[in-house]
Image (cartoon, rainbow, N blue to C red; front, side):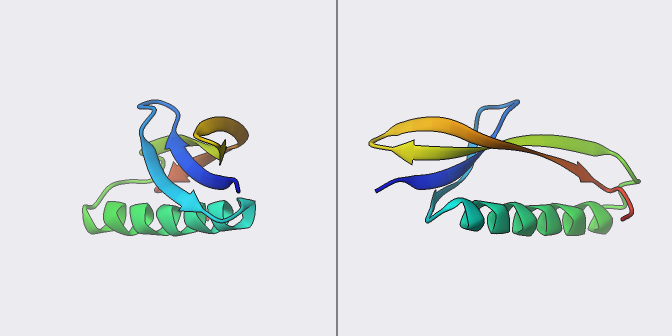
Length: 78
């Protein structure tokens, strides 16, 4: 059965693995975005400081395939 994971496209580091489906990957992206925004605010970082691109990957039998891309703009007022 496939699972999903999030990978930083710059460092190629897997940030979250073992997600049940694409919806769980999107929820993990939202949580990661909230956590990073909180950390930036706590450290006094200004708006538009960090742009992070992540791949959503589907993992089947140990093989990862990119099935989506998300760009997080951290520190930008919504």
